[in-house]
Amino acid sequence: MHKFFKRLSLKYQYLLSTFGVALIACSVIGLLLYFSSVHELRKINEEQIINRLFIFAEELEIQKDIMEDVAYAISNRIYLVLILLKLFS
Image 1 (cartoon, one colour):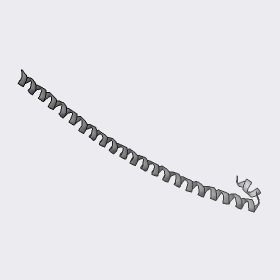
Image 2: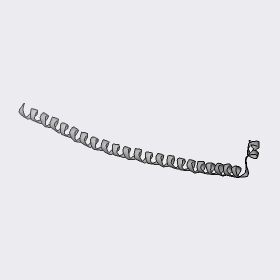
Image 3: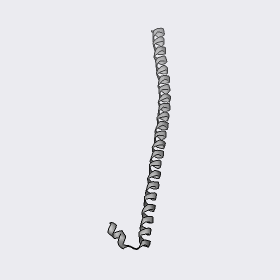
Image 4: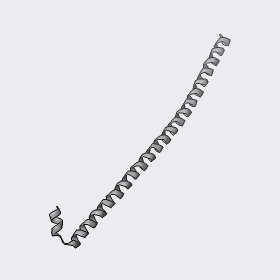
């Protein structure tokens, strides 16, 4: 590889070196942007999961309240039916 560079003119050596440095710099910047984007996506994903879990918990709470109301209504009806049966029997 070193012999290859010696055979090239100084202008081409300078040009290849410049391209090499630019390529390395662009690669480093690209990697930094990539890892930053991955971090942001993970953070957004976690926030969305947490929001979905809160919504799910709220829905479960609403369903629990509805079921409690239904259970209360059923128990009152049974109680009333028992009272009516005792009164009319």
